Length: 182
Image 1: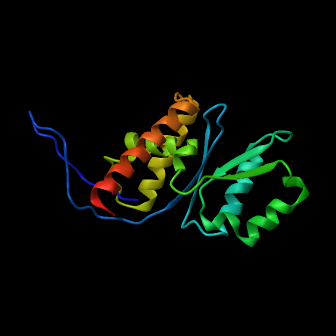
Image 2: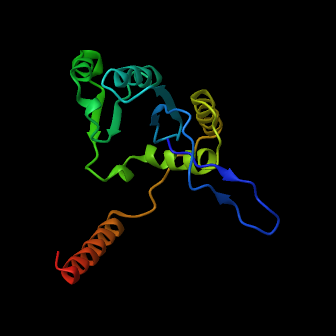
Image 3: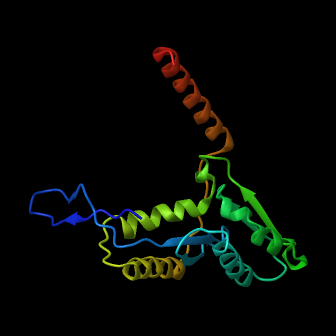
Protein backbone atom coordinates (compact mmCIF):
# COMPACT_ATOMS: atom_id res chain seq x y z
CA UNK A 1 0.00 0.00 0.00
CA UNK A 2 1.44 3.35 -1.04
CA UNK A 3 0.83 6.05 1.54
CA UNK A 4 2.23 9.50 0.85
CA UNK A 5 3.00 11.88 3.69
CA UNK A 6 0.85 14.96 4.13
CA UNK A 7 2.75 18.15 4.79
CA UNK A 8 1.41 20.66 7.34
CA UNK A 9 -1.04 23.18 5.92
CA UNK A 10 -0.12 26.85 6.14
CA UNK A 11 -2.50 29.78 6.31
CA UNK A 12 -3.61 30.71 2.81
CA UNK A 13 -1.96 27.67 1.25
CA UNK A 14 -3.32 24.46 -0.13
CA UNK A 15 -2.54 21.08 1.32
CA UNK A 16 0.57 19.47 -0.13
CA UNK A 17 2.03 15.99 -0.29
CA UNK A 18 5.62 14.80 -0.37
CA UNK A 19 6.97 13.32 -3.57
CA UNK A 20 8.36 10.40 -1.62
CA UNK A 21 7.07 8.13 1.07
CA UNK A 22 8.28 5.64 3.60
CA UNK A 23 6.71 2.23 3.55
CA UNK A 24 6.47 0.74 7.01
CA UNK A 25 5.23 -2.64 5.79
CA UNK A 26 2.29 -3.97 3.85
CA UNK A 27 -0.76 -6.09 4.53
CA UNK A 28 -3.14 -7.89 2.19
CA UNK A 29 -6.77 -6.85 2.63
CA UNK A 30 -9.54 -9.25 1.67
CA UNK A 31 -13.01 -7.69 1.63
CA UNK A 32 -16.50 -8.80 0.67
CA UNK A 33 -19.67 -6.74 0.42
CA UNK A 34 -23.27 -7.75 0.87
CA UNK A 35 -24.61 -5.82 -2.12
CA UNK A 36 -28.13 -5.72 -0.68
CA UNK A 37 -27.16 -4.05 2.59
CA UNK A 38 -23.73 -2.56 1.88
CA UNK A 39 -22.22 -4.35 4.90
CA UNK A 40 -18.54 -5.22 4.47
CA UNK A 41 -16.48 -8.14 5.80
CA UNK A 42 -12.72 -7.72 5.99
CA UNK A 43 -9.79 -9.96 6.72
CA UNK A 44 -6.04 -9.37 6.66
CA UNK A 45 -3.32 -11.64 5.30
CA UNK A 46 0.39 -11.31 4.71
CA UNK A 47 -0.29 -11.94 1.01
CA UNK A 48 -2.82 -13.16 -1.52
CA UNK A 49 -1.70 -16.76 -1.82
CA UNK A 50 -3.96 -19.71 -2.49
CA UNK A 51 -3.81 -20.75 1.16
CA UNK A 52 -5.14 -17.34 2.27
CA UNK A 53 -8.31 -17.39 0.17
CA UNK A 54 -10.03 -20.43 1.82
CA UNK A 55 -9.80 -18.79 5.24
CA UNK A 56 -11.65 -15.74 3.95
CA UNK A 57 -14.17 -17.87 2.05
CA UNK A 58 -14.88 -19.70 5.32
CA UNK A 59 -15.47 -16.36 7.02
CA UNK A 60 -17.95 -15.41 4.29
CA UNK A 61 -19.62 -18.83 4.49
CA UNK A 62 -20.16 -18.37 8.24
CA UNK A 63 -21.52 -14.82 7.80
CA UNK A 64 -24.07 -15.63 5.08
CA UNK A 65 -27.19 -17.32 6.46
CA UNK A 66 -27.85 -20.88 5.36
CA UNK A 67 -30.41 -21.07 2.59
CA UNK A 68 -28.96 -18.08 0.76
CA UNK A 69 -26.69 -18.45 -2.25
CA UNK A 70 -23.26 -16.86 -2.13
CA UNK A 71 -22.22 -15.08 -5.32
CA UNK A 72 -18.61 -13.95 -5.23
CA UNK A 73 -17.25 -11.58 -7.87
CA UNK A 74 -13.49 -12.02 -8.20
CA UNK A 75 -10.71 -10.62 -10.30
CA UNK A 76 -8.53 -13.05 -12.22
CA UNK A 77 -6.04 -13.56 -9.40
CA UNK A 78 -4.61 -17.04 -9.68
CA UNK A 79 -5.04 -17.61 -5.93
CA UNK A 80 -8.79 -18.03 -6.51
CA UNK A 81 -8.32 -21.16 -8.61
CA UNK A 82 -5.84 -23.20 -6.57
CA UNK A 83 -6.42 -26.88 -5.79
CA UNK A 84 -7.30 -25.93 -2.18
CA UNK A 85 -10.10 -23.63 -3.37
CA UNK A 86 -11.39 -26.15 -5.93
CA UNK A 87 -11.46 -28.89 -3.28
CA UNK A 88 -13.23 -26.63 -0.76
CA UNK A 89 -15.84 -25.54 -3.33
CA UNK A 90 -16.42 -29.12 -4.52
CA UNK A 91 -17.84 -30.11 -1.12
CA UNK A 92 -21.62 -30.70 -1.16
CA UNK A 93 -22.14 -27.97 1.46
CA UNK A 94 -20.76 -25.42 -1.00
CA UNK A 95 -23.39 -25.89 -3.71
CA UNK A 96 -24.70 -22.45 -2.81
CA UNK A 97 -21.38 -20.88 -3.83
CA UNK A 98 -21.07 -19.29 -7.27
CA UNK A 99 -17.85 -17.65 -8.44
CA UNK A 100 -17.94 -14.95 -11.12
CA UNK A 101 -14.69 -13.65 -12.59
CA UNK A 102 -14.38 -10.13 -13.98
CA UNK A 103 -12.65 -9.70 -17.32
CA UNK A 104 -9.14 -8.24 -17.24
CA UNK A 105 -9.21 -4.46 -16.59
CA UNK A 106 -12.84 -4.61 -15.47
CA UNK A 107 -12.48 -4.48 -11.71
CA UNK A 108 -15.02 -1.61 -11.72
CA UNK A 109 -17.66 -4.32 -12.17
CA UNK A 110 -16.94 -5.51 -8.63
CA UNK A 111 -18.72 -3.23 -6.15
CA UNK A 112 -16.19 -3.92 -3.39
CA UNK A 113 -13.74 -1.94 -5.52
CA UNK A 114 -15.99 1.10 -4.96
CA UNK A 115 -15.68 0.53 -1.21
CA UNK A 116 -11.88 0.30 -1.58
CA UNK A 117 -12.04 3.75 -3.21
CA UNK A 118 -14.03 5.09 -0.25
CA UNK A 119 -11.52 3.54 2.16
CA UNK A 120 -8.60 5.07 0.28
CA UNK A 121 -10.14 8.51 -0.17
CA UNK A 122 -11.60 8.90 3.31
CA UNK A 123 -9.07 7.15 5.50
CA UNK A 124 -5.83 6.07 3.87
CA UNK A 125 -4.74 8.69 1.35
CA UNK A 126 -3.71 11.32 3.89
CA UNK A 127 -2.94 8.88 6.65
CA UNK A 128 0.42 8.38 8.28
CA UNK A 129 0.97 4.82 9.43
CA UNK A 130 4.15 3.99 11.29
CA UNK A 131 3.52 0.25 11.33
CA UNK A 132 1.41 -2.47 9.77
CA UNK A 133 -0.55 -2.59 13.04
CA UNK A 134 -1.42 1.13 12.64
CA UNK A 135 -2.54 0.55 9.07
CA UNK A 136 -4.58 -2.53 9.99
CA UNK A 137 -6.22 -0.67 12.87
CA UNK A 138 -7.15 2.26 10.59
CA UNK A 139 -8.75 -0.07 8.04
CA UNK A 140 -10.58 -2.07 10.73
CA UNK A 141 -11.91 1.10 12.38
CA UNK A 142 -13.10 2.46 9.02
CA UNK A 143 -14.85 -0.83 8.22
CA UNK A 144 -16.54 -0.86 11.63
CA UNK A 145 -17.75 2.72 11.15
CA UNK A 146 -18.97 1.87 7.66
CA UNK A 147 -20.90 -1.13 9.02
CA UNK A 148 -22.54 1.00 11.73
CA UNK A 149 -24.65 2.50 8.92
CA UNK A 150 -23.83 0.60 5.71
CA UNK A 151 -25.04 1.89 2.37
CA UNK A 152 -25.26 -0.30 -0.70
CA UNK A 153 -23.80 1.14 -3.89
CA UNK A 154 -26.40 1.59 -6.60
CA UNK A 155 -25.47 1.66 -10.27
CA UNK A 156 -26.69 4.90 -11.79
CA UNK A 157 -25.66 4.26 -15.39
CA UNK A 158 -27.77 2.04 -17.60
CA UNK A 159 -26.24 -0.74 -19.65
CA UNK A 160 -26.82 1.40 -22.75
CA UNK A 161 -24.96 4.35 -21.15
CA UNK A 162 -21.99 2.10 -20.46
CA UNK A 163 -22.02 0.60 -23.96
CA UNK A 164 -22.17 4.09 -25.48
CA UNK A 165 -19.15 5.21 -23.43
CA UNK A 166 -17.20 2.10 -24.43
CA UNK A 167 -18.00 2.74 -28.10
CA UNK A 168 -16.94 6.39 -27.73
CA UNK A 169 -13.69 5.28 -26.09
CA UNK A 170 -12.98 2.76 -28.85
CA UNK A 171 -13.61 5.43 -31.50
CA UNK A 172 -11.22 7.85 -29.77
CA UNK A 173 -8.60 5.12 -29.38
CA UNK A 174 -8.94 4.18 -33.05
CA UNK A 175 -8.45 7.83 -34.07
CA UNK A 176 -5.30 8.11 -31.95
CA UNK A 177 -4.01 4.85 -33.37
CA UNK A 178 -4.77 6.05 -36.92
CA UNK A 179 -3.09 9.44 -36.33
CA UNK A 180 0.09 7.92 -34.88
CA UNK A 181 0.14 5.05 -37.40
CA UNK A 182 0.70 2.45 -34.69
